Length: 173
Length: 284
Figure 1 (cartoon, each protein chain N blue to C red):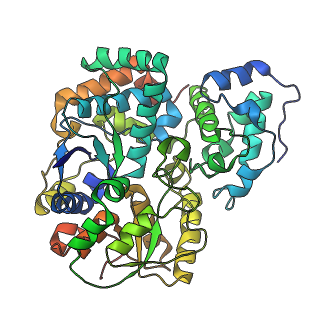
Figure 2: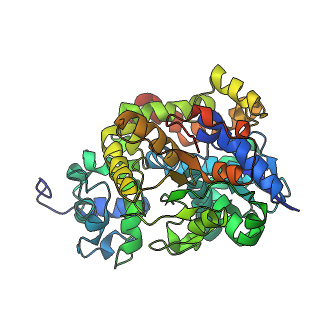
Figure 3: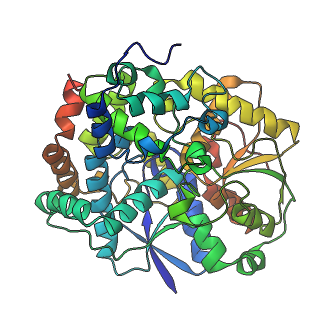
């Protein structure tokens, strides 16, 4: 895949990436240690070096819609090995935060986020879970937001203040 | 007696509660008191939630940290790499960035009346076992049992990013292996031992086939080393190896969280370990 369809660098977008947490993006000199260390890139065409380059040049239309952005497992191996101290995971997170606001949100991820909006947890509490917990001598309903409606309201309120619930409901569109 | 707020997270209490009962028993026997965090929530998970909105991610994490702060404990302890990453990284950001702290506390206060004050230490249970409990105290509890060949899987977010976590060398770590060996097992070297299980960063939810390819590569490397058991320190890696093998069908290596392995070594009743929900049968 070509690095980009975009021909002109856009420093304004690069500045936004930096402000959103990717403050080390311009330190990258494209050596490729990241790509060589990437467990996801071993299995796919994902090349993390290219993601960083697109962010560096401000190629917004090439980087935000890209599936590549979502193939990073955030394992931090590249981050650890980068000879320039580029905080690559932070750059990817900044880009993902921008991508979802443009509507680039997978339904599978939207569902996960919807779960936390509704219950405060990522995983559901089923009757079989309660039964097993009781059998193990644990409180059948965990002592978390699951057993404290007031606490759940607090978590929901954080989502409302941040606009997170709306982001999830609309899929960023 | 050391006393820690016990952060449960999501996958352990809801899908592998045996890890929770084993953790409670193991820490009790080692003289560490674990206290429940009433009203805690998801950490929130660093994969999807941080990817969507870092402000929300930090504010919910700050609420969990603030709950622990009010408990008068020595710190908050988690048995999950994902929860550890969120709680540790958010605490670190809020402790070092006064502007971010002000912004997050404004949200937290409006939502809950609480504030994060930067007084709580975030501990990963493996690091707490190694540094505070110590290998000798663990050895003293071991009741004998089988010497199993273990593939130790550190996962990603226990040690990394190492510039802020400062627990062990992220390329050649030893703390987790040392505990497994103190429990009477042999930690076996295998190819690409530090590699991700494949599940993190939202990859398992969005592209499960890609996640599974990474899992498979790890399983092949572990099999080549002739291991009896995979030992993890994270319920999400645990889920990925356990359910991943059920999907792949060609591997049947039992998967134990370190708390369960220590439970076995300490002679806890097997009923307390919740092994019946594991998809790969555990017959050790």
